[in-house]
Length: 114
Image 1 (cartoon, rainbow, N blue to C red):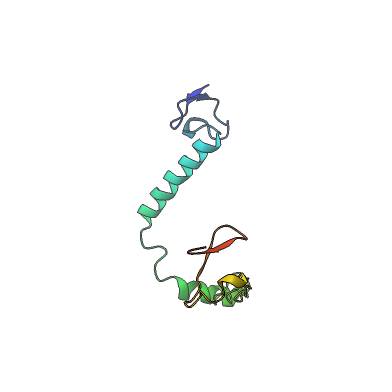
Image 2: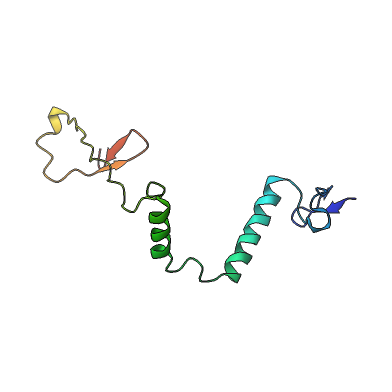
């Protein structure tokens, strides 16, 4: 038996364990769309499920001794990096204001006017 995928329109052979209920083929795009629709449907049916659950989850974690599973505190910020700014000698008398560096890519910084 062959069926047409609801998402891409291609024909596919359904998994025999699912049979008639299968609506999408096994392509990753179709599976992703089906999963998104299923999640939207679930959230619509269980609207308040995730609201005000922190106290319940925290108590459950305490009982199960799962403290290392989820962090209660935010991790410390990365330390501030210090950069050495090399200024040509002929420009040293010109600079009077604060120099603000802008990140150009992963390792290159630039400042306005140079």
